[in-house]
Image (cartoon, rainbow, N blue to C red; front, side):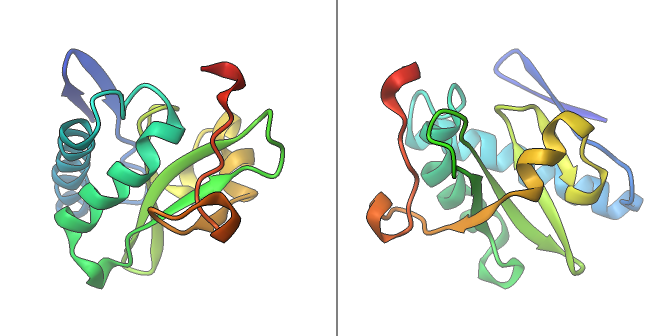
Length: 140
């Protein structure tokens, strides 16, 4: 199953998800993509641009009861990545438009799994020295 938003196709991995969960994930993911883009024009072009507006859109789409949060692997400032996630029946559901993956963390593709495994929870809308997103401007 895939979602199309602004001409780009986003992969939704149905592995481990029932029919109702698949529909919920697709609906929430589309709201996150739309909300992030509405909040920041270039949100879907880089993970550092996506993290905070993506979190805000996820919070709006799911409410706080699903524990929406930002995750990231940024120990190496030259190889960092961020995405948003929420709780789906006790499992971590990832929405990662930059690496084009939406689905349960345990079913992620091998290429992405190494990032997801080294994650930390990132404080939204917070300076880096307080636990927020580290913006590596070298690649911009």
